[in-house]
Image 1 (cartoon, helix red, strand yellow):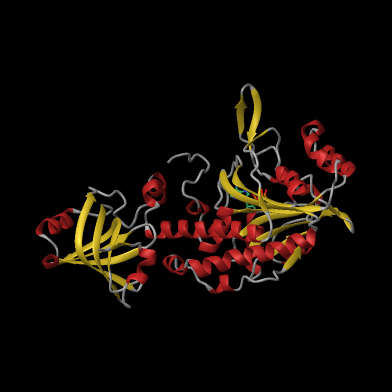
Image 2: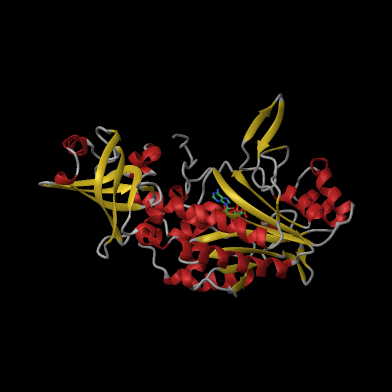
Length: 431
Ligand code: ATP
């Protein structure tokens, strides 16, 4: 009896007969021998089928089956050092379950618009499937690390009444006649969770009606937002170093074949170990000025500035102590200089820029009310949030890490659109 195997676990079955179910990724015929590369979602493997070893019917089916036909093969697993994954199947049985005619992505040189319109098919490619397996590892590792460190998963609502990250990027929805918005962040709810459960994280989609086209922005992206009571600025930073290092290490350990498919240089990833360098916003403005950037203290740093800084260091770098005016209303002022806040963004190296935004939050009731007013927000919209400072307030901190930005960096992608199965971008809603 042949065992049902997958490509990922094929090494366990050398010398045995296995059944594999998958799709034809490539096919080559040479007289009485056919070579197919079969993909089953977990990986790719070469299957060698000889006319004399299978029935005439099977051989006929094999000849008809072209790219992306779904197939079932049975065969003997052989160690083959010259094969990409180290193994090969000597085919003994072949069946085409569904024969594909005219696979639209057969050519090598499709443009990106065509590929995006066919995203539902494009995700089957070697490169795209490798990225999506790495994305899986990253999400899993994030959750693993937080769970191991005593954080409770605490999901925030997606339909909300007030803005969290500024009002310019809100998606409005009609809530039975009332105005509501798709969530930009679960943070304010996570703060309530932290006062209930100590350490929590939200993990869900975030929506931002970004109006510019960049390589780093999606309109819908996934974010993990840990939040912890009694965590102060420094605890928050050190936790992020451990967290990001754990994620990178998990990918290095679990996705070696996928990283190879992507030609991802490993050395920059292997350097990702605590401690990470830090630079204050004020120091960064000075450094940027010396390097030809026209930025002044108080300006928000844009993508070119972030790219410069993240190329300047060979590890992820914390950019800290921003002017209060360019950050969110809830960030704790630095007691030594209230013009700046106890916030840090983590910039990924190799030019990737911000992947994390985090801060210590204001815990003082009067100060938070004052900031709500200063930022032109309506106090009545934040009554429940102010309650967290009325009843048993504590210092607390947290951060938000964008899943797709992390995937784009770890996979070294040119554009964030490949980091999510079905990207939502400006003027791009299908498939
Ligand atoms: P940026 O200035 O780069 O637009 P931000 O400062 O608005 O980002 P935060 O509000 O701090 O970002 O969000 C936390 C994290 O969420 C970011 O560090 C990033 O990883 C991710 N993120 C934010 N906006 C987007 C987006 N439009 N697409 C993908 N990821 C995003």
